[in-house]
Length: 262
Image (cartoon, rainbow, N blue to C red; front, side, top):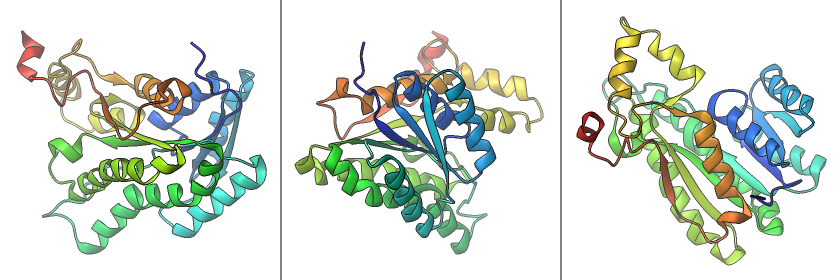
């Protein structure tokens, strides 16, 4: 199926690793220009080099997205180079464990800047170009907004904000024909997830316990599965889909987990 993404300039934040990287790779496979935005040039460049080595198109720009001035600067740099923006994938963030008991005001506010403020800023600065191109926005969000997790108040609040902004922007941008959707991540296997699981005393036992509770196939979601949905939602093939918060999670959030052992 032709997803109608050829030569489209798509910004993906936090695309040097994990889910963001897979999103960039899938866009490139669809002949879009994957524009990677992240804080480390060396990490960004590794992804760009791998994509271009396969004859596909990608570029990278450095920004510390928790700094508002960097968000404005990087969008301006992208427009200066490509002359257009066709899509924005807000993905960058970190589950940083700022809890109600363990956290503080400064940490809470810093976490919001790391996890949701730049979603707003990147969309705000990219909007003039998205209006011209009649582009689209996809926000990557987390189940923590709906299920909670414990000791991660700021991250949960940020993801609640991501979901709310998805619906709000879908309404506000209707008049421009700009579609806005979200992809919710639950238990997805990434380098960061692997690093976390390995900190546990019995990592394999805990992993088995988690996957046993995922109804569909009792396995983790792959980063590529998140990427496939993200790219579809950005594409012209989802032309009448907006304001949707879509869970790519094997039924983890909404299905009765008793089904996993049925």
